[in-house]
Length: 198
Image (cartoon, rainbow, N blue to C red; front, side, top):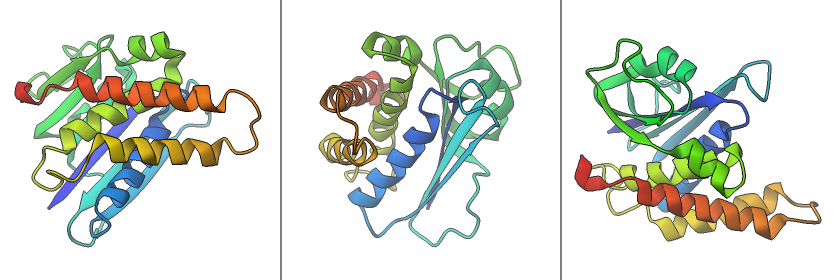
């Protein structure tokens, strides 16, 4: 069985980080699974297109690029217009509340609208959209056949804490605050997804 997840938006929203962290969390949750993480962004780190794909499988992954996406998070209209058609007909497109799903050719697909960017800004900035998306993805994927009972919020928190401690090594101030805000964002995202809605 294979699952494909895509995070897409603008650089600076943490799209790349969300994919990297999801891959690390899945590896921690079940080391027997095969996981491929593929980031992609334009020439501009901030403000340009950014996306990251995570492929999860119980068999060796023969092709490391997403072809038929099962779960996609689209933070911008541009990302939605560009990538919604790659989502399977029975997949799920999670859009930010500012994205208009009536534009484009994907109106017949399943959509779930969340206040990702607004919530991230309430925490401290767009960059926290990454851990909000991450929390939502963990809740949703943890109820799929491949990952049922494997993806736990507490495990995800430990991976996120370790990741930010390592990436912020050498930074003298604000490390604990940044980690705490990311954990808060993770919890917010996890609670945003209501499994009974699916």
